[in-house]
Amino acid sequence: MKRMHRRFHGVSGLLSLTIFMAGAQPKTLTLEQATQIALEQNIEVAQAQNNIESAQSSVLQSQGSFFPTLSVSGSWNRTQIDRSASTSSTFGGTTVEIPPQFAVTNSFSTGLNANYVLFDGFSRYARLGQSKATAVATELTSARTRQTIVFQVERSYLDVLRNQQLVRVSEENLKRDNRQLERITESNRVGALSIADVYRQQSQVASDELALITAQNNFEKSKSDLIALIGLNPFDPFDFVDASISTDLKVSDVDVTRKQYSNVNDLSSRAWAARPDYLGAQERLSASESGITQATAGYWPSVNAFAGYGLTNEQFSQLSSNKTINWGVRVQWNLFDGFQTNQAIQSAKVAYRNAEIGIRQTERDINNEIRKALLDLDAAGKQFEVTEKGLLSAVEDRKIAEERYNLGAGTLLDLLVANANLVNAEANKVNASYNYIIAKRNVEYVIGEKSR
Figure 1 (cartoon, rainbow, N blue to C red):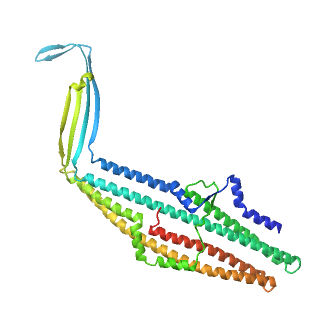
Figure 2: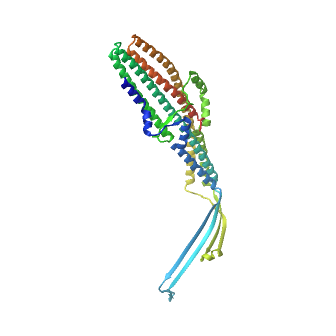
Figure 3: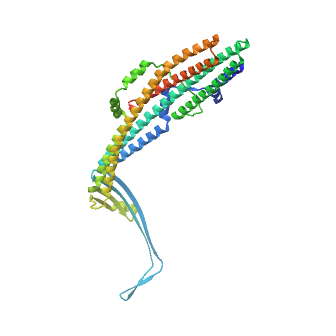
């Protein structure tokens, strides 16, 4: 028996040993804290934020097209002629001697030029509208990414709590079977029970120890997954405890939730009004519409106003003595561009039609997600109701089997079967409770009304 106790304490102390070897006290994280850290540390959230900054810079660039462009230039040019020997050339029968020559000429120039687009076929306005719609769509995509990360953290956090409860179920089962082994061993010592019952119970205790090791391993792995998801070091010790999460569910709670989500059409309308990805698809449709206007600009003439101010001279000190000022208006109209504008318009229209299809597909996807989420919620509610009844029955059956065995009216096999059924019922109750909580939060996520 002492050896069995040592086994139990050794198995149940794996977590404490791991923390001791880490050389640090575990830090407790609530669900709210874990979610906040994930929103700050998660890679997908950071990438979505970077995309927002990039889209906003495109908006700024589009706004800049409404301002004149200014440029300043300067140059220095040196020309050197070096002819060391005289040459001769014949012109009309007369030979002319050209003496040696050495000459150096410098040329300095500087200028300021301005250009302003007066008309470009409404391309600037379309480009600005497209960039703004794209920026809004990018922000909405980021918002949906944040919602996704929040839900993933919630689900992972609840999995940790679930596995922690399953560890406790395994621990209580091991303690219960150890106490039963003590009674059986004592009864065998006084001759009331056979040695076969002792061996059978010892085998059951060993099986319970293995089940506890598996449960603890699953618990630690779920913690590691959660820590990695929120962007922390998986080798650092953490405890996850949140008093605000209650698994003390009642059948009445399930009924209230069913009534809350009974109107499917209302849920679809709410999701279309709240889901950032659906709103983002509408913004992308608006952006593609602006793309058509921008492509059509190729059929219009462009009108630019320009002005320039320049200084030129062979001597830098006299540069300001020679000034040049010019200004004017330039009109350009491509009468034929090899059907490039036509191709650009057709491509823009295809992008617009694809964006329309994308919205319809998003609507179908949302409806499908809502339906599946409601099916999961309904199934989780029914599972909870069944496991609630099953646990009550298993507790009573185990009590009866233990009393019958202690009185000699039942067999150890009956007691082991009743105990196994109780353990399964307890584990099923834990799983059903957390499955229901996750399913309910999944409905909130699918609708998209819960945001961070």
